[in-house]
Structures are given as structure tokens and as C-alpha cells.
Image 1 (cartoon, rainbow, N blue to C red):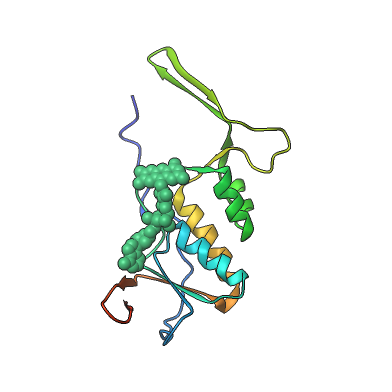
Image 2 (tube, rainbow, N blue to C red; image 1 turned 45 degrees about the vertical axis):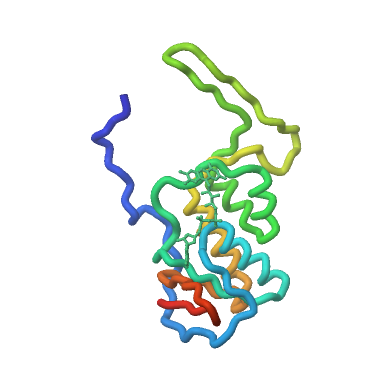
Length: 166
Ligand SMILES: Cc1cc2nc3c(=O)[nH]c(=O)nc-3n(C[C@H](O)[C@H](O)[C@H](O)COP(=O)(O)OP(=O)(O)OC[C@H]3O[C@@H](n4cnc5c(N)ncnc54)[C@H](O)[C@@H]3O)c2cc1C
């Protein structure tokens, strides 16, 4: 039985975006990215590396909390590698190549994913999604002013010109 008396991690244990001083909103941006999840943050870093400025608006006030991704595929790591966020992910996570499932004492599933010696990444790395977001965010910020990420700011679609409210 799981130990239900064990303390539940609080949000204080999660990585948090670096503190920023209040900034004016740009009057226009080449690319507006609605959502600072793994995709939005990695996209911002990718665009910045191509010299393209973007503004990410994330409705939440920090990285994701609660039950989200825990297994990152080799392909996701390859993409993170394009912005230099792969090593931090590998260092923090737990790489694995196979799994076993049991029903009581009986093994009911045993699988191994394709993996050759010398491959850059394991087929899967176990790591909480909020770390992935933090590493992708760091990669975006490392590109200087081309990547602008704002939390607690939601995109609201409208009929004419898109607007962002903080
Ligand atoms: C329980 C669970 C387990 C999962 N397990 C895995 C797994 O093991 N491996 C795996 O690869 N994937 C897993 N996934 C899927 C994975 O979480 C998603 O594929 C991933 O989060 C998608 O990233 P994203 O950046 O596209 O979207 P999201 O992570 O959903 O990010 C979207 C962001 O947009 C923000 N947003 C929404 N609307 C607005 C708005 N109008 N303005 C501003 N911001 C807005 C949201 O707050 C959110 O932060 C799991 C998902 C769940 C729910």
C-alpha cells in the first residue's frame, strides 16, 4: 500500500520562472505564441536561434503543476537539443529502455524499446514536465531579447486585431 501519510510536494518545490521587473508591452511582435508549455517555450527558443523575435504569453503564473507529462521521448530530446536544452533534461531525468508490468506477483508485460549502444539519447527519459518547461525557457532566455516570455498573461482572440491582457 502507498504511504498516504507522506507529505505531498507543494508548489514551492517546483521550479519557478526567474523574477522579472515589470516591462512595457511591445506594440507589435513578429510572432505571438499563445501558451508557454513545452511547445511554446521551445518554439520561442528555436525562433530566436533563427533571429526571429517572439512573444510568449502564458496564462498561468508559472510552469505547469499537477499531473502532466512524465516520459519524454527520444524525439522530444532531439528537438530540445536544437536549442541546447537536452543535456539539462538528461542530467535531471531518468533514462530507460524498457518496462515491466505485474498483476500481483505475475509479470504480465515486459517490453524493450529499440536502442543501440552509442545512441545519443535513451528511448525515454522520465522527468516532470515543469522541468522541461524550465529548461526550454532558459534556452529561450539565453537568446537575449529575441525571446520575450510573459507569465500570467492570456491571449484573447478577437474578430479583428489579437490582444493580450495581463
Ligand atoms: C496526465 C497527463 C500525462 C501526460 N503524459 C505524457 C507523457 O508521459 N509524455 C508525453 O510526451 N506527453 C504526455 N502528456 C502530454 C503532454 O503533457 C502534452 O503533449 C504537452 O503538454 C503539450 O505541450 P504544449 O506546449 O503543446 O501544450 P500545454 O503543455 O498544454 O501548454 C499549453 C499552455 O498554454 C496555456 N494557455 C492556454 N490558453 C491560453 C491563452 N489563451 N493565453 C495564454 N496561455 C494559454 C496553458 O496555461 C498551458 O500552459 C501528458 C498529458 C497529461 C494531461
